[in-house]
Length: 76
Image (cartoon, rainbow, N blue to C red; front, side, top):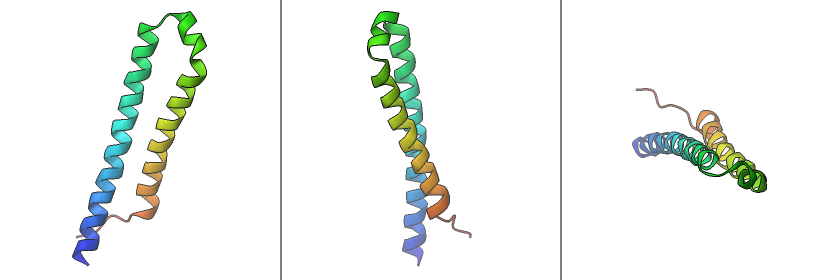
């Protein structure tokens, strides 16, 4: 039983860490791309940026959902 609780703690931390890192990474990436590229270049890759943002933010939300619904916090 102790191993199961430890695995749940590791899974909960991993899912939270993934959500934080991916959210920060895509936010920084999008901010840098907006600052570096000109308006014409941004217009040509707008759909790719929206797709990348949706993918990374979406997987972060899924990780938080899985963390909240399918892993129960172990009580001491």
